[in-house]
Length: 269
Image 1 (cartoon, rainbow, N blue to C red):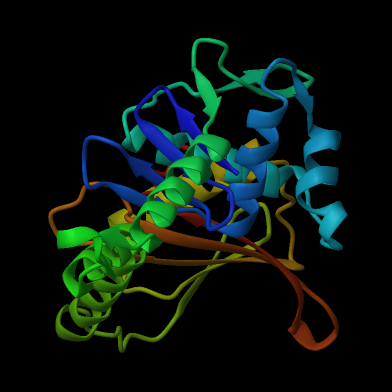
Image 2 (tube, rainbow, N blue to C red):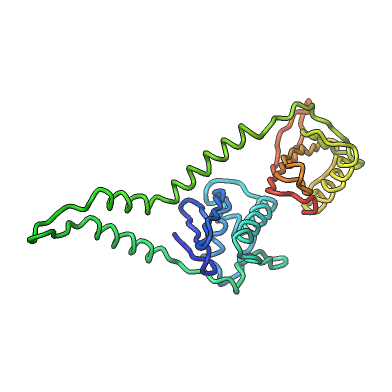
């Protein structure tokens, strides 16, 4: 399916791509995020309960979802759409679930897109009469241009991926610091995989406790939170962040971990 959101954003459910019509901005959604947005668009005239969304996005595909997973991907979708100019696209309905903002327009353009491509393909494929009524095949450059115009999205994605890999290997220096573990007053342990100074660590401990309280996560001796992030020196926020909430079993080994990913965690979520 192909949707046009607010006349500016194109959303493809097939590959999870969000593209802006007037800019070169492009966002690749994860599979759960793309499924979640697809369900919200299809049911945009009504409120989707948390149970319904968990069933449609996770249970239907043999996966196990939770409220935490749902909140995480709702937050991701909001940030992605806002980054393309569509703010407040998803509304929270207290004690019920979520819905697409009625002020956000959404149009199914799948048939129009297929029709346009089919028409162009048929026109390019037909031979054209030349001089004296002689039929000639379409030129090589015409066919090449037609092919590239249809595949431009994949070319852009390939170039972007190649640039990202190059940037990673030329700019990223792996951390060689040893993990540091701190026990919170409630009993659980926070393990930092990055080198954090004392003042920042106190602030992070407070932010992590606030996050756990806000998501109903227990803090006792059998729970460990693993914190890892990557940010430039100029950023005030924590940047790309992973919080792994793990439960320990016999021998102190982790038996289960719930992972929370943030593109630019500010510590107040």
